[in-house]
Length: 272
Image (tube, rainbow, N blue to C red; front, side):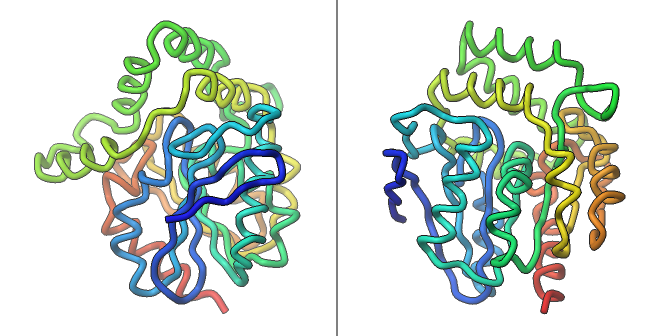
């Protein structure tokens, strides 16, 4: 468990454990590196597992110049990779974290062995040229909820991660609840800045530049980042494979961790 002081005056919190090929995990909106506990436990025996809290999330601070949108997230990711000198790495990004990876792809390309994009979309909101996003009013509605009561808004968002029947096993639901309980909520302004970034950002051009092997993992019933978005990514990224998880929503790495970890391990093990 360590801190990285960035050139923008912020402090990034990260953790690493295990040895072998670097496997770096990037979380989604209003989450933290703690959300990857079920992957750390399973994969640290074969990989050097690294997790971080994006700026303004978890224990990481907001830099002096503010959040800076996806450019800021990506700059911090590049800074951490360079500070740890990660080579031939696999980077896993979920939701907002997947867009961070697309934004950071160019400066990280020479260090990458593969990308894993989970519940990913290159554009969160609908547009005529990309009809696989949510209506902007959905994000606006979440923005209003965050302004009124951050804690209640995040509780509602966490419920939306899973679809009906996905966590019917009571014992597993308790395990998922324990993981989510470890996630420290960001400050309201960081949450709002993240939503603003999601509402305005577009990574279609960045996605078209990806040339490394890419694994796309998506819940078949994901209501937050639509499965059609990862189908578009699969058609756009030349060396890619897409796996859908039936009966799953936006966080299959939590609801189906054994299958998710196997798929991830097979992908990592098959890279040169």
